[in-house]
Length: 450
Image 1 (cartoon, rainbow, N blue to C red):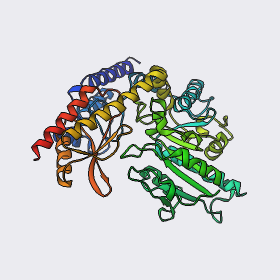
Image 2: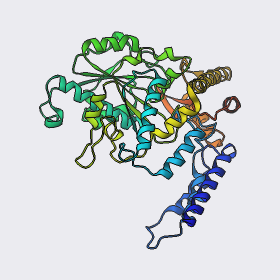
Image 3: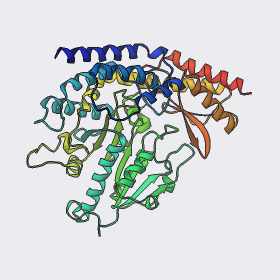
Image 4: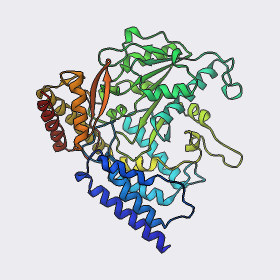
């Protein structure tokens, strides 16, 4: 026990030193740090090493080769940092080491995750009483929601999916946005919906589905909408599209991995009408700033999700809203606990304040970049700033130079077939000074490229 305690205390010291050093750390690791990772290569050792040596190697070689996504100058992929309350809750939950599948496995996890589920629904303005499964990612949660959707549409036609599968079943059609996120396509592909059979709804110049060109819907259709297009941050016109879908008997699923959190802000009107959908996915590890991996599968019809995901066995039965009956995982960690901790620490006002600050910072960043001679492609309605320089070559060169500097990091994208870069403001650690630093760096790089 003394050795275990010393080891955990050493891990805590190293973790605290890492967090303390984030402001001085390169946002993307230096080439020599990446090269040093080769020391991890090698065969499985015949004899184990002392645990303290293992931890030492992990920290000394691994820490320098990490991206500082837990800092304030990481602007890639809508990756938030981890709020202190959520990080601390994760550490405690790790010590608990619960198999958080049901009340019988962990009364504490079961009760806390149920409260977290209710708080998520309240924060997002979604129907209270909806099922909330805390899964690994928006991809996994989309898979769960779309499984429930298909199963329910088939049941309405009298088809027993659980007993008879898909052979000979009525066809379920899927309509997606032309700018649908790849994770939705991945979930659909895994479920057996061929990519050539998806119906792509044309979009407008902002990446939103154009209601005038929406493919026909019926009671065997799943319509997939977006809350926060990945490049522009735009929202499909839910208030117009969802009533049409519901009138046709279609199931509406909303991919709200990060954009759904705008419902907790002063700009909730951007996602007006989204609460009328049948299911939603949302990440905690993006804009809520919780640790990886924590996401939510949300379904208006609790039974639809609970029956699709049910994993009761003779030796392990549980309530329909037990997490093992709402997610893909049977054995799972309590992903809802850091989500509960983040919401408890922020409160309604703190959550709104954090999101509103990011919206303001993104808007200011766009203003600075326009003044520096950049083309800001999108309207910047959310936390995404989509940018080009004067030519494709200059855009790529500036992006590469910014990444190589180690001062900031953001990733590439394509918009309408041409290179651009996407700046995502989503870290609770990002200050106004960090935004100014990014804008100053990009202005200097623009001047140097002339």
